[in-house]
Amino acid sequence: MHNPHEEDYASEPVARLRADLALALRAAAFHGLAEGVCNHFSVELPDQSGRFLLNPRGLLWEEVQADDIVLIDGEGNILAGRHAVEPTAMYIHAAIHRIAQKACVLHTHMPYATALSLTPQRMLDTTLSQNAMRFHGRTAADAHYNGLALDSAEGERIAHAMQGADVVFLGNHGVVVCGERMDHAYDDLYYLERACCVQVLAQSTGLGVTPASPALAQKVMEQTLGERLQSELFFAALGRKL
Image (cartoon, rainbow, N blue to C red; front, side):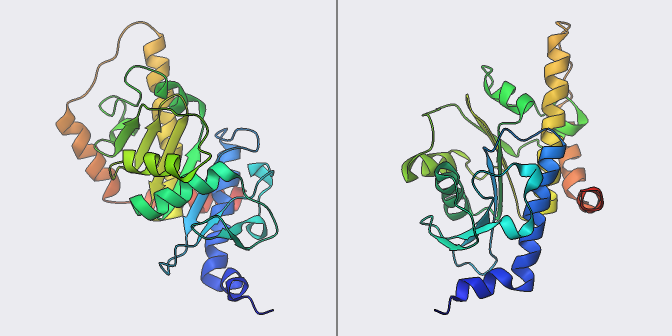
C-alpha cells in the first residue's frame, strides 16, 4: 500500500533533518550528556503537519544514525521508521512542539543542569559566567515534578510551564532546550551544561560567587544570539569528528 509518509521520510529535506538529529544525539553522547538509552531529541517537519522526528527507543545515542530516526505524528503514531518510540518522549515532545511552537526540542538529564534543578533556585544563574549570560531572559523553571510523563496532560503541563522560554529546568528531573535549528539548539544545550558546570564548581568552593549586572548579562545574550556562525561551525565540526 502506498504510504506518503515514507516518501516524505526519504525526501532530501527530511533526510537532512534526520541526519542533523542523529548527529546531535551522537554529539551529546560524546560530550557526556546522555543517560543510558533514556532521554530524547526531536525536530518537527517544516510543513506544519504536526509530524516530527524522534530518536528511537532502546538505542544508545552514540549508535544512532539517520536511518534509525522515527517519524511520528502528534498522537504518537509511527508513520515511518523501523523502531519503536519511548512513551514519555512522545508525550513531552508532542506537547512542546504543538503548544510552545518549538521546532527542535532537546531533553536530557545532563548532570550539572539537573543538579541545579534540585536546588531551591531550580535553575542556572544567568548573571554569573559568560556562558550563562547567553541564556539571560531565555530560561524558565518548572518546580512541580509529577513523576514520569506517561500521559498527554503532563506533557501539556510542561509545555505551558515553559512560558515561551528556550530553556526550561524541570525540577527534580532535567532540562529541555529548544531552538529553531538543530545546530543552534545543540550549541545551546552544550553551553548550558558548561555554564551549569562552572556554577556548581564555583559554589562548591564555599567562597561565594560574584554576579555581573543584569544589564551586562542582557548585552552578552544579545551579542551571542546576534551572530550564530560559531554555533553553525561547531555543529559542522562535530559532523566531521563524529
